[in-house]
Every structure is written in structure tokens, then in C-alpha cells.
Image 1 (cartoon, rainbow, N blue to C red):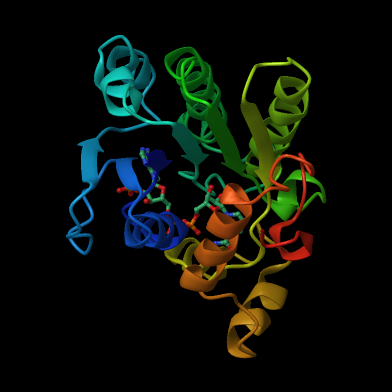
Image 2: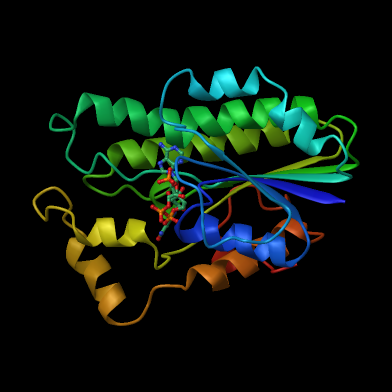
Length: 243
Ligand SMILES: NC(=O)c1ccc[n+]([C@@H]2O[C@H](COP(=O)([O-])OP(=O)(O)OC[C@H]3O[C@@H](n4cnc5c(N)ncnc54)[C@H](OP(=O)(O)O)[C@@H]3O)[C@@H](O)[C@H]2O)c1
């Protein structure tokens, strides 16, 4: 039996990932602040949690929900997808609370979950972790210094964990491309004085160049379940084999 933990399953790419996994008969434990009312399938467990709140995830992980969810899985998956773009501003003009929340949500939570997941899945024959990274981890964007730093942290975490020699574990940190989600709406709503690339992202939407979340989710799930997963630890999903 395959079971998957998906953060940020209430919207955008995470919602499409949860839908894709459930359609394949894979049970999903979704972690977001909001529930996803569109996912009616059996096999879905939802837990409301603010992953940007210091202490909230540690408190949840101190309980048994995660271990209980994976205890009958042969293969367990962790998709660290939840993320926030804010603060979008140059250094010196970023809200301190937004910096702290972004680091907690985009970086601390995936690392805490990965650590707990590895500990809880020792008896699974297969276990796979994917961090949803970003092109901003590898190319700097003015205005996105916090976001890019958190995503670069995910990449380096995956590279190091891949060297830990953990039995049965494969890990990758993958950029999904430019996906037509609420986060892209937020990109286009940025103050152009704070985000000089705004016009380029607006043009991508106008020219129909954004990927559909369902297409990206199908490709990611195929790759995650495929034989090559983990061979490219810090790749771009668009350049990887699907399976
Ligand atoms: N869209 C793109 O073009 C693109 C490109 C590169 C990378 N990414 C990455 O892809 C991932 C998914 O992004 P998306 O575009 O699908 O964004 P989205 O539509 O804004 O969805 C973000 C998800 O994260 C969850 N989330 C946000 N803050 C949270 C919090 N404090 N606690 C718990 N969950 C929280 C949201 O759920 P709640 O609001 O219910 O909490 C939501 O389900 C992110 O890591 C993003 O950085 C996206």
C-alpha cells in the first residue's frame, strides 16, 4: 500500500497533487490551514495546521498522527509543497514577521517533516521525499531574496540527505516550472517597484505559457513513483523523465 503526506493540499499545485494521488488509490494526509472541500475521495485525511507558526508543527509531530498514518504503508511519500512567496520586497523593506513566517513555512517545516517522516517509516520498503523547490533557488530574482533563500535551502537539504545512506530513502528537490495557481496571481499583483520581473510573468500568463496544475501534478507523481526518482536530486521537473 502506498500512502502520501502532502502539505498545502488546499490550493494550487498541492490540490492537484492530492487529487492525482487519490485518483490512483493512494491515501493522502493533507496538511494546510484550510480544508479542501473539492476532494471528496475516500482515502483523504485532512489536518488543519499553520505551518508558518513556530511550534505548531513540532506540537503535532510530538503526537502519533504521522506514525499512525504510515504504519500500514509499504511505500510512504512526503511531498513538501506548501509555500509562500511573501515578502516580495528588497532587503531592508521586508516585513520581519513575513521573513520569519516564510522561513518557518518554506524551510523549517519541510525539514521537520522530513526528519519525522524518516523516523516514522523505518519499516517501509520504500520511502520518498520531494521538496517543491523553485527556479528562484538557482537563479536570483530581485525582490525574492527570502523566497529564493528558503528554496535554495531545500535543495541543499535534499543533496545532503541523499548522502546520508538511509535505507530505502530517495529524495529530490524539484522546481515545477511556472504553474497557473493562486501564487502566480500573487506574483502578478506585486508592486513593480519591488519586483522588476513583473512584466515577464504577466506576459507568460497573457501568452498562455503557464502550466496547468493538473499537468504538473501528473508529471510529478509519475516521476515520484518512477524508477528514476532520486537520480536527479535538485532538478527541474520539466527536464526529467516522467517515470
Ligand atoms: N506556481 C508556481 O509557478 C510555482 C513555481 C515554482 C515553485 N512553486 C512552489 O509550488 C508550491 C505550491 O505553490 P502554489 O503555486 O500551488 O501556491 P498556492 O496556490 O498559493 O498554494 C499554496 C499552498 O500552501 C499552503 N500554505 C500556505 N501557507 C500555509 C501555512 N502557513 N500553513 C500551512 N499551509 C500553508 C496553502 O494552504 P492554506 O492557505 O490552506 O494554508 C496552499 O494549499 C510552493 O512551494 C511554491 O513555492 C510554485
